[in-house]
Each structure stands twice: as structure tokens, then as C-alpha cells.
Amino acid sequence: VYSGARAEEMLRHMAKLHADPLDVPALVERLGLGSCGRTSYRRLSGGQQQRLALAMAVVGRPELVFLD
Image (cartoon, rainbow, N blue to C red; front, side, top):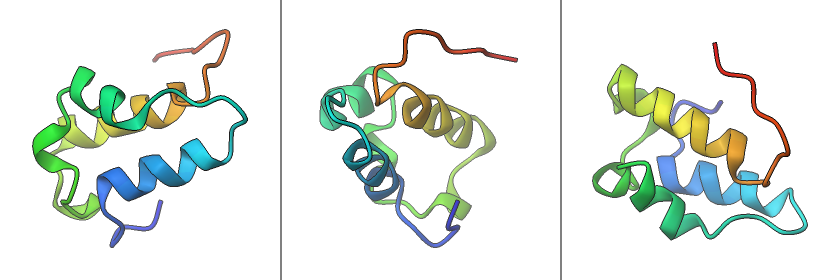
């Protein structure tokens, strides 16, 4: 993860790697990341970083996600 990248641009980059990604703005809102979309990764709180990681994991519509 590039620490200087903004949260929403990181998620959009991950979405581009998949053929049929979820709608990024909808995913951002659903996970409560709307207010931090333009915030750099390093400035996000720990919980926001975890929610962003979850969004990045599911944006490609995986069949299964392991959460620890």
C-alpha cells in the first residue's frame, strides 16, 4: 500500500484490476468511508484503514473472503 495515496484512489485502482468490480462510490458509502475518500492512507485511523482494506478485498466480487 502506497502510504501517500488517497483512500478512494487506492480503491479505484483495485477496482480497475477486476473485470466486474463493485461500484466504488456505493462501496465507499456502505463501509462508512465517505468522509475519508480524499484522505491519504497514512492519515486514516486504524479502523478506517481496516475498512479500506475490506473494501479493497471485496471490490472484485470474490466468492469467499477470509476475515481474521
